[in-house]
Structure formats: C-alpha cells, structure tokens
Image 1 (cartoon, rainbow, N blue to C red):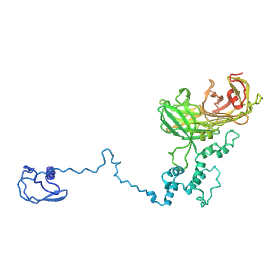
Image 2 (tube, rainbow, N blue to C red; image 1 turned 90 degrees about the vertical axis):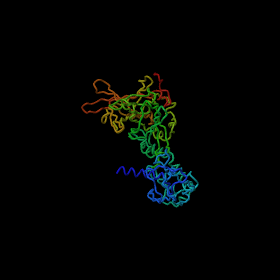
Image 3 (cartoon, one colour; image 1 turned 60 degrees about the horizontal axis):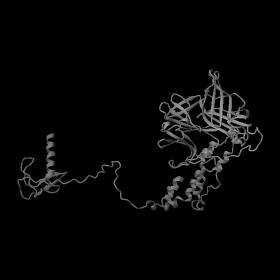
Image 4 (cartoon, rainbow, N blue to C red; image 1 turned 60 degrees about the vertical axis):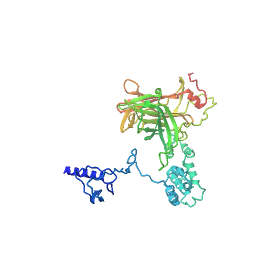
Length: 525
C-alpha cells in the first residue's frame, strides 16, 4: 500500500510538470524521448484530474512521441506579514480617512460624553479643536463638577451660591464656573484652614485640627530617593499614625535600592487628585526636608534585631536596612505638628516653606529673669502604631546658676510617670514583621512664657542601660539647639517602666535669638 501511494504522488508530480494549467503541450519545445512509465502515450482526449477538476487536452495529430515538458510557472507570493513583523501585531492596512466623526455627533451626545471627565481631563480636551473648546467650556458641566467637589469637602462650610435651581447656571458668562472651580479647588486656599489652625489644644499647645485639615486638603507624603547614577525613585506612603503632637509616616512597599546607592532623600507633601481623577498626572509637591544620605557621617546607628538595622538621619527620618545586604527595608518619618500644614502645602518642589520671622518677645526689656520662667514642656513617647507615654510639665523654670558650655538648664518638677507597655519599635516590610526592643519615637514641644512654640523635637531615640543592676535606664537626645535626658527605672514586680526624671538643656544662642536679648555668652559666664 505504501508503494502504491508513492507511485501515485510521483505520477501526479510528473503530470503537473508536463501539462500547463488549462492548456496542453507546447509544440515549440524539444520533445522528451523518455517517459517515466516506459511506454508510449496514445493521442486522444485524456482527462487529467488537477485540483479536483478534469482538464481535457486534445492533440490534433496522433504521435508516438511523449509530450514536451512545459516550463515551470512561478507561484504567486503568499499574503503573509513581513518577516520582521509578528503575526500578533500584523494588521491589514486601512485607508486613511480625513472625515471627522465627532462633527457628525449631535452636541448633546458630546456633552454627555464630556460630563464623565474630571476637571483636569476636561481642561486638556478643550485644546483639541474649536468644537471641543466650545463644548468643554459649557457652564452646565463645570457647575456639576463644582457642586460635586464642594460636597466632598464636608468639613468646609457649604457655599450659598449652590442651589437646587440650575436654570441660572447658563446665565453667567462663559467659563465662570470653570474659573471658579480652579480658583477654589485647583490650589490650596489658606484663608479657610488658617482659621482652623487658630484653635489650639490647651494641653499640647499645638493646633487641635491638624489631622482634619490635612485630610480636607488631601495631603499625602512621598519620598524621593536620588541614586548616585542620576535615577530617581518615588515611593508613596503606606501607613500613617497620628499622635498627640506629631504624625508618623511609613513607607514599606516597593523595590528599594541599597542605602549606599542613595545620594539624597527628599520628603514632599503631595496633594492627592480629586476623587475619580487620573492619578498619573502631575501633582502639587511641597518640599519638607532634604537629607544627604551619601555622607556616612550623617548616619547614626540606633538598634538592631535579627533582620533589620535602624539608621537615624536628620529631620526625624529613620531608615531600616536588611542585615547583610544593606538593602532598604522601610523608611519612617516622625513629623511634628508645628507648621506641618504650611510645610506640606506652601512649599515648592525644590524649596521648603520658610515661616515669617516673629518679633522677639522681650526686646529691650531689662528684667534679667525674663525668658527663664513660665515654660511648658509636653513630651510624648510613641511608635508607629501606639502611644507609650505622654506627660505635660508646667511651669518649668530656667536655672541661671547652672550655665555651662553654652546651655541653659531647665528642670521640671519630678513626678513618677508610668509607661504603658514595653518601649519598642515595630516594623513591617515585604510581608515580614518585627519589633526592635528599647527603641521608640520621642516628640517634645517646649512653649515659652507666651505659649508660643519655642523648641520642637521629633526623633527616634534609644533606651540605654544606666547602671549594672539592670533597673535604671536613660533615654538621651541631643542636637545643636538643645539636649534632653529622661531617666527611667524598671520595676520587676510590676513589669513596667517609670519615668523618674527629666532634664532639658537649651542653647544660649537659641534663647538670645528667640527673646531678642543677651542672657549669657555662649561660652559660659
């Protein structure tokens, strides 16, 4: 059977070579005296089955010679995509049409389509052509956007201009509602939230509605890591924790580089887009702080556990790196409430907000005790998930007989204050969780005699052993403006820490600048 099939296909190929499609042998060709079958062919009307149809070939004169072999005809080129083009990406060419199908739509249909856009997209589409410019500036669309955006800000007072009667919407000049919504919502309007900042919490001395104002202004925080090769990586916040006088922001997701590859770390306040708006558009950014990470003398090692190490930088920035690889695991920032709203909104992408200078409180006053009495100290220990301890001291007096090395000594009245739970620093990164013991965040607010913020601190601190009996501990902090030392004692029976002492030292230079008078020389007496 296999031999029969082979003979059939051989005869078919020979017939295709000898017979033209739809014709017969060419008499002008030199005859081939050989025949594959070894026999002469009779001249007659012979049907040839080719491609499922019979073709009759007529020879006018009988001849015993075999038919001449016709020349091979070239096959038509296959209709396949170019070799460099993949089959999935190949599409047949479509003739280009200059017809504008949007012009054929009724204006009502186009307005209905445009009503689903947000303010940013509606503003951009108005520059396509004259027709879309006219339709995208329709007062009815912008009026609906204005009503929806004002309704989402529930902490703001509802304006009297909004009413249920929309008959007068088109009576205003063209573009009225468009200009109004960009003036009201396109940039932070400080006339409203500045009034809210005037409500001060008497216990903490800080604005009482900082969290509500930041939420109403849609403020988030982002960090930008500038690598040494010039690349920039932007990370959005993953978690926030609002304490009494500060907010802790955490970034713990994404692909992080090694800490040695980072040149600078920038912290920005970012205004989130409106609800339903596209998130890939440029957003307002206000620089809060910029930390030079490449200078290793700025690194301050705090503590470690089995997985991560804690590094502390300026401006309350704490970085956790994986042990052994030095790849960043997470970043935390402890931001003090003092001027936080202004720093998050009123700065530029490259320059931070600078508050206006306040006139000295006691400029020209000859009383030597002015500026050294009636202070208030509010201190909070916390981490990224809970508050550990808080305490308010009033009044706090400055001691003029303990001036040394350019610092004035402040000592509040001693009262034992219990600590709620363990002093720890929990963290989360890449699905893993951990807790670093004897480490937390400290937020200190020092108010002057006029209850104005005098010294504000928000930083990560470490609890150190003070003596050899493992019962007394000290929690220190220092910078160029002052020093803090908190003394703790561990009660084994109660399994609890107690704060038994607090010492604060403020630089003489800071006192002289704040009060506008020369208290003492920075070098001592």
